[in-house]
Length: 313
Image 1: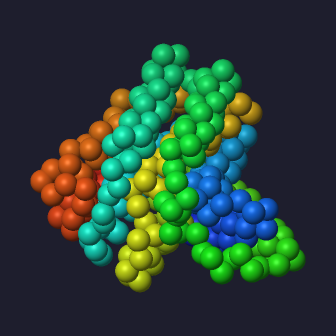
Image 2: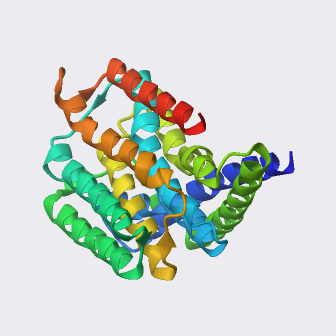
């Protein structure tokens, strides 16, 4: 019971922490006169990846590296199959053509690179992690050069431009503390629960922890869809997946080499991540081009349910 409370408490703190971190980051960016488009593609993406980063760092230091890898693999599956699936069920989502010109190929390339690094020597070392992080920086430079100011992210709240420094730093402190304790509680609760119910830490991390760290994206997407806003886009979710691989695993492996300790990471889970990423292209191009319809959303969600079922079975 105690481990379940830690797990739930950790999830709640991650949601609160993620929200405050995004608000404070955006507010600070406005103060520094950074454009709305740049804030959306860099600051917001990095802030929403903070739960994954802290959970992975915490897991690596606690001697549970399988949690670090499976958290990212599970989150990347959840971002597309769960978050996009649920959001599309609420209302169809229009897709920008930049999806298949840059964002999708880069996501698939990072996913394949991660698979190669892990398959090659059953670990992600500092050089490989540094390479992933360097790739992210190059991607961001290309992304910013290719983007125009009018493509500004709808996710960025203009009202945050008027917030004072005092409130920004208070939000930053609340967000940072909530994420720190949330990640610690979530990892500890998950590890204890795995021991109690006889399920491996890898299974718990690819399902429950992954969903937990994807909750900020899911909550924001559902709220935006219910309001009829275009705040959620496939580009943003793909950006989050790229950040998860390149910054979360990249930075974590720079601190500590991440060995593969659970065989199903390479024999099963990572193939689900690759399949969900690759199948996104034909799903968007056929039969109704550049629209994620409710039916497509249902297919994505059904695939996610199968993945969760098989993970526990």
